[in-house]
Image 1 (tube, rainbow, N blue to C red):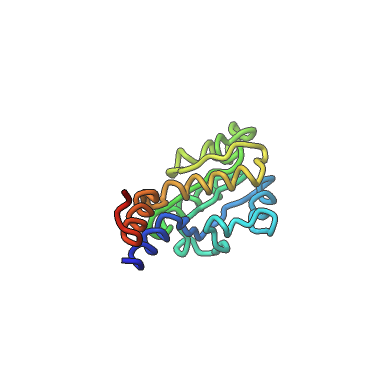
Image 2 (image 1 turned 90 degrees about the vertical axis):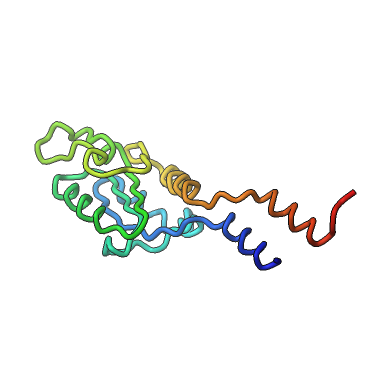
Length: 163
C-alpha cells in the first residue's frame, strides 16, 4: 500500500513534460531563448530542450511575426505534433498579426489556422509571462488527485483510527 501511496503522490505532483518545437521570429526570439537559461529555467516546469522535428514535439511555441511561409510551417508542424498537442502563441504579432495585419504576405492570426491553447500578449512579452502560460498548461494536464484524502488515508493506515 505504501508504494501505491507514493505513486499517487508522484502523479499529483508531476508536471507535464513538454518537448517544444519553436517557430520564432522577430522581436520575440530573445524572450523565448531566455527561457532555457538559468535565470528562468523552464525545465522546472517540465520543458525539455527544443527539438528540430515537430514529430518529436508535443508543444509548439509560435512567437513574433508570422509570415505566410511561417504560418504554413505552423500548420504542417501542428499536424505532425506527437500525442496530445499544445500550442502557445507568443506576442502581439502571433496573436493578432499587428502591426502588419494589413500586409499581403502576413498571417492575420495564428488561431485562424490552428488550435491555440494559450495566448501570451505583449510586444514582446516578458519571459515570466511565457512561463506563466506554460505553467497554466501544466495545470490543465496535471492529474486531478485529492492530496488531502491520500494523506488522511496514509495516516489512518499507519496510525490507525483517531479517536
